[in-house]
Amino acid sequence: MKRFSTCTPVEHASPRLVTMVAYEGAEIIDVTGPLDVFALANHIQSKNGAAEPLYRIEIAAKTGDGIIVTSSGIRLLSDRAWGDCSGIDTLLVPGGPAAEQAPEELVDWVRQMAPAVRRVGSICTGAFILARAGLLDGRRATTHWSSAEQLRRSHPQIEVDEDAIHAKDGSVYTSAGITAGIDLALALVEEDHGKGLALDVARLMVLYFKRPGGQSQFSTPLLAQFREGGSLAPTLQWMQENYRRDLDNETLAAHAAMSLRNFARIFKREVGTTPARFIEQIRLEAAVKLLEETSQSVDAVARECGFQSGEHLRLTFARRFGITPGQYRARFRSETG
Image (cartoon, rainbow, N blue to C red; front, side, top):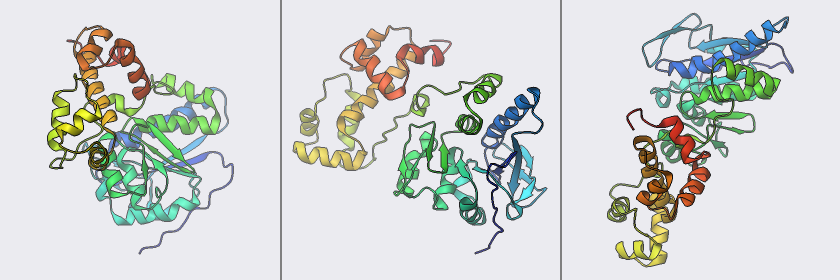
């Protein structure tokens, strides 16, 4: 294994050095979005008369002054080689289509650097690089909702929270899909310099300071994907076609031709959640679609989707997504709806 020089962070160093890793096929917004947050923090402080910036920002790649082709084809120029680093305060790892195939040399470097930096974080599927480096073992972490189940399967020692916009566990930080890296960077600025500065940066970027709800509000497919070909596949399909009905466990177990106890056990094993949670998610997905595409009232949407009442839908929606059906509709409704 190639050994890299390690960085010795300076306590309370100012400006703090933020190093963003780059590699071929990285998602460009994962790289540039968070770095813009730190750059704007510097800009605001400069306008307020600060003598020096709060952060130094750099992109580190396999070679210094090297060209990195991102997933969009846009090219970035690195500032330093991975092995030439020193004094890193915050080490960030972006995601992208190539994240799971990132070179082992990069994974080794991140693994060796982590103990020497104040904090390390990932954006989107960059979590897979941290996972390969062993930095997420036994920790709570998140990634893009569409990759959460894959992260859970490939690294079962990680507590995967597929709904979190970003997560902190000790000195290790992870964030959800793409623009959630900006949310994470805002949280890091707040952690370093307080809410006021982070709020000013968010205003300049025309962003929520703290985004309401989790990332499940942005997913259209079911988060609890059932296993195709499993023994419950016919019943799961039937549940998706009959979610408007009153589906209790006894009815579902009878459809699956199983005892109630055996049904509950196999359902948890094959689907990864309870029957009630799965039905609730099906109904919520149906409600989301109607909220986006129609002008039906919340009460009408509730009846259409199998909820007991409009209030039941409102309570369930708020519990799962952190916002009300009306707030969701205001933000995400189709122009043609």
